[in-house]
Image 1 (cartoon, rainbow, N blue to C red):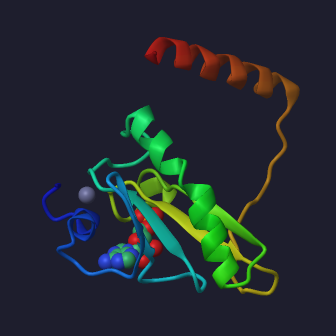
Image 2: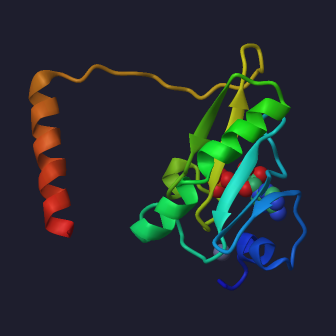
Length: 141
Ligand code: AMP
Ligand code: ZN
């Protein structure tokens, strides 16, 4: 348990939440500040900061539950679609520094939108970026 972490407290049952699922590893509950109705969070019980910090086997087990959770959430709000987001770091809009997935149901006209100003990847940059990232992966494992 990380000192002062609100999600550690929720995982320990010390702070109440609108819980939808719990097992040995994880808890899922409604976001207290939903961007749309049904906005749900999924957290490991153990404290990890985000995707840059979590062991592969932990995130693998947690994400294995996402299809079940997302299907249940969107069915209840009668949405045909959803985002599954994992903000990692303050620059990427992470405000609670305990790993969490957002499940955000989506339907046309729901008033929510994620800005996505798509650019254009040219072949030279693409080749170089792909090579650098592949090399970085080999260095860190
Ligand atoms: P993020 O910006 O990705 O770190 O998202 C943190 C999310 O946690 C926000 O959507 C908050 O509304 C939500 N949140 C913060 N405190 C609580 C809480 N006590 N119970 C439920 N959701 C919370
Ligand atoms: Zn925590």
